[in-house]
View (cartoon, rainbow, N blue to C red):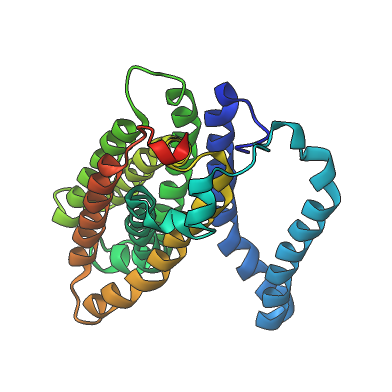
Length: 284
């Protein structure tokens, strides 16, 4: 997308990228449960892996159609870029800030994805349908928020970093309200939707923020490496945080997990504000 889409449309492209991701997350439980009901768990596992293979085939078939090599940065590397080598980008602090940003935000989502049903059944006394609706509301809110966030990326009066920080502040406040249990019952669904809305609005600006930092510090040649590495923070966060928060559920500290979500989102705010999009000599 960075290479093939004009800058003025890039925010909308990132927004659609996030919307389709949320649609996939929302559909996945229904798809897996239905498939398992018809064909057993092995059939469901095979169906899930088949989706990935179908995507791979489509990518291989259409890569020539959607690839526009004319827009790629084909200038030869500078002496400094040759000296730094393939992994020289790891010495740039902003790359690590972006990695940690993904770690914290995806860690918070990983907790909600893994434990929200248990939390809302026990802390808010919702039935299984209501507890599942809370997570669905979060995903739908995130999708709607991403659509709104795509338009915000074209507003130059406020930086992408600040859009991300403001939206995640809103999301963290919603998580804190959930944890405090000021509101009860099905208010959990509403608050989850609002939390998802905040994270969704931040998503396109988040991608623009990473793009700006990459161009400023390393140049366009590093898009693939930087995005690949920073998005690894998403996988690490979603993998590790349930391990740390799961024991809290074992001892009945359900709302403490929600406070943990708010804390992770707050840490993400500070990492976003640390990302700089000011050019450095090595990128020129």
